Image (tube, rainbow, N blue to C red; front, side, top):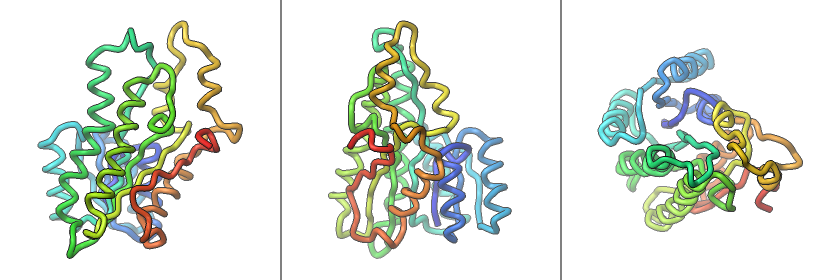
Amino acid sequence: MAIVTGAASGIGRATAIRLAVEGAAVACLDVAAEGVAETAGALGILGAKTMVARCDVTKEIEVKRAVARVANSLGRPDVLCNVAGVGTFVHTTDMTLEQWDRIIGVNLTGTFLMTREVLPHMIEPNQGNIVNVASTAGLVGSAYSAAYCASKGGVVMMTKALAIEYAGRGVRVNAVAPGGVETPLIADFGLPPGGDPKQFERIMSAMGMCKPEQVASAIAFLASEESTYTTGAVLAVDGGVTA
């Protein structure tokens, strides 16, 4: 059984669908009630066992309740995909503390809270896989995105730390690092006033933008039995941006 956060749209929705196609029961978590219901409806059409849980991953009590509900309804989670994410381009001197806290809260703290609650279900004698969605912004610098880079860099290093901590205990922890992806989130990454357009050239691939389904394929691989000797890896899905 798999839990997917950020399942209302974009990479989260594509991941939920891909895992359902692979035969998994999928719990869809998100704060966007309408969108996550649409995702669950798509899974139902595929014949997958599914459920929806509203969850703000920055809220500890909501995470605890959501994971407990999922375990009671669908059984022990053996896959967790931490996909929920937010971000924006903004001059650092213009960034408010509220913006900073929101980005760090969803992308990094949310990944931690979900992981902490799910891990007890996975540790031996059980087994499990955790796949975090990082970003090329967690691997290389990007202008106008200090908070986003900090959050995704944190996800990268948390992935590696957890992989070491739980190696040999039945849990694998990996991450994908997408570049530019055609999702609703990309609308929040417009050039800030006075920003240098050349900065975009540094983070754009000659292969164009990635599709959510391409990232979902990488997530599905890391969550599958095809990658049983892989843990602590960060798989770039970025059209060569970080090559």
